[in-house]
Image (cartoon, rainbow, N blue to C red; front, side):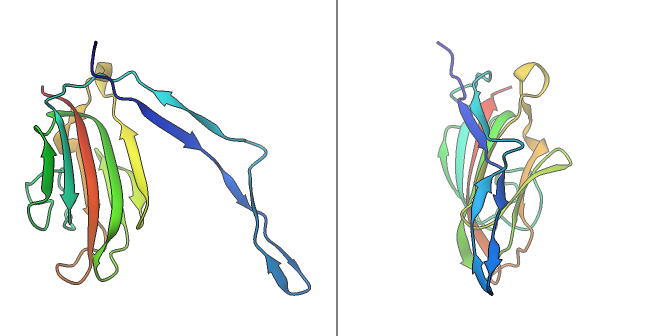
Length: 165
């Protein structure tokens, strides 16, 4: 049996339906009735068990590839065997502010920003690449847009998973 990545997702477009009656504001929301919701399970990617790594730490402002090559303020806590050479999925969570008011953690694949996270938000991005082989780790990046050493820092958790070659 192969090692499979099960990535579940859902989209819930929410409309602000707030109303004001006699100067009182009633805050409400509802699912957009034109689109409804949609969700599912993506499980086409098979990964190498030796190519799974979890990082917990403080990323620097640089948009370097996710690793210990200068993307982190200091060496992050790492678990797992090794970074994948080809990344098939990245999961990023903006855990908390370590100092100041770090604003946004950006997740970039190639040159395209895929997510901008604020505190408490998380994202999982599947990266199939050609023939479900993933993309080179250098193409998968995170950085803190508001980073300033000692005054604006974020704590994040990142999981990279994929292929050994």
